Length: 284
Image 1 (cartoon, rainbow, N blue to C red):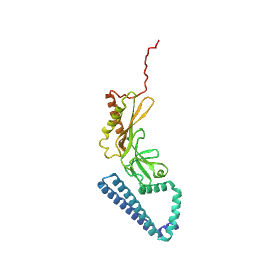
Image 2: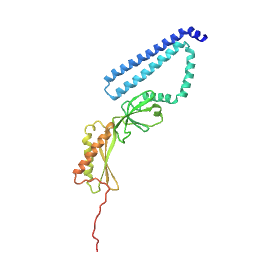
Image 3: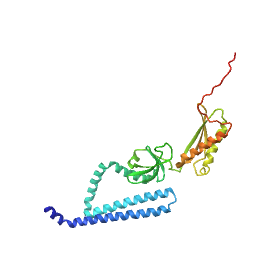
Image 4: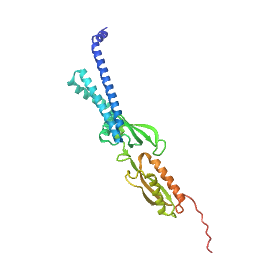
């Protein structure tokens, strides 16, 4: 009976607390709806990858900050103990920091990404052994649309990998598209020593330029050809800047073009392992 009586005596406090919680939840819902609508409208006006990334980051940062302020103010208002709140907050932070080391490290990594910008949404990156395009990142994870995966090339696998943010402090971050959307790639063909080397160099150069004609003016440089001695022939390597998301597409087209041109050429042959038997008459 004493317990029931105590509950009845404090029913007003419970009702006030419930109303405060509902008010806070309603305000948080309004904040989420507001920033969702704002982001949608701004995304329609964004024209570049950088602008879209900035909109996402600004929305996340503003929403998290405003929501945290609302919760803190609600706690302070309901407790009525502003002076003791600092001590409580310090003890709570220490306990949470010990129990949630990796999540807190993840939040610190999120702040690092927001301020230092090692990558943006849309960039192609490698984090440890995960490679793909960044589609989103939040307080806990970086969402990466995987490339490669079950196959060993630069094609999109269709799988999304969620990388914990705390890994950003422990793994190397490689950004394909930090400065621009191009990366250096190459195609190598090994030709015989009997081939016309100048003609082989020309074939490699023309093959690359045929498919890169529309991107050379915006890329860091034009295709270039390098040659090296090998045991059974000479490597003719054409190096070119390819759009990062089309590496395999361009290398496949250039490879086929080189093959077709060499087949049509009479003075260039592809070297491959084979045995040649030569019969000579022994001098008496």
